[in-house]
Image (cartoon, rainbow, N blue to C red):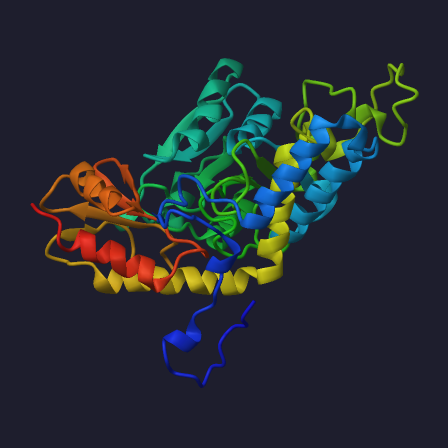
Length: 394
């Protein structure tokens, strides 16, 4: 792996890092749709193949794998977000983590959840479902270009607000929420801050030990480059203590005992592990995601984020302003790795089809074109996308 560039070297080429070599698409497609799915690195694909070989011949699966492999994954995730292993619940999606909080929380009649108007459904629906237990949901509006104004949030909180549920990076504009400012406001008001981090974790650094959030929940199949059906939740221990899992997984209760002795009907307090998705060893997915996390951690999130922002800047600098409106913020401190364009001429789906015909994959969301480059992309990928975008017929 090449290192990050020396600061005094001025050329653009010298500032690039060859992350693309860890990924492979033999057909040469240009994937600019990580906000939908992130490709798995080659090493993760090999890990899946090895796990499949084990399942084909189960005598290769050691008994210890049922506990050791999910614990290895839990440790990697804790290190990835700056938490501890006893603060990580293993899941299969973002929704798993949000639902275990929403359904496990000790609601009282009249309790209130504050959500963001127009937010991603996964961040909103679990709270709306709690209305049957007496909770109420209110919404705060975003500002220009999708920005969530912390002062507007402060004014929207009431004495009955128990939870502020937000998405770190907005899927529809690419705007990034100021978790530090929101967290401080919530701490002052005694409100829990629950964050959907699925469009940020893996694309930008995060340290939950330094960020005033109470829960950070994410899937693993976007920016973390894991397989579909993966996710996790980091939970502050004080929040974990409030939650009622409402379910028991027998194998989790086997901690410290081998499978030769299984007929124990004792239910113990096992902390955050009681919130895991069932069967967290899930050998194929666990093997692949573990491999992807090891790669990302080895490359370093600071460098990955910097690379992504260079790609975003190239997109913003190169797109034809006469053909497209940039929907989200342009300032580095407010934007993310998502670039959302509103077409002024050809409909978004027609332009997306033109890109697809040239092997460039993007997403259409709410009538706009969304491009989401990641570490495996290059300037050449961006330039090819710009060539098609800027020549699209109106």
